Amino acid sequence: MDSYGEFIWPAYLFATLILFLLVIFSVKSLKKSKRIYKNLTKKNKKK
Image: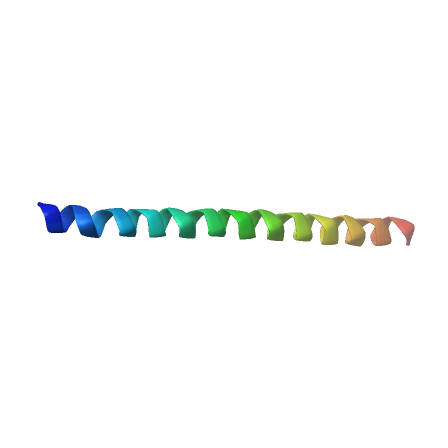
């Protein structure tokens, strides 16, 4: 049981860290794509 506990906590923390990084990067890319979309729609409205 000790070896199982030793393995599971680092893996759990590592997976949590990866999930947080994925969320942060996806939010950043969403903001960037929204900005690009707004710029494209502004250009199309001017035409």
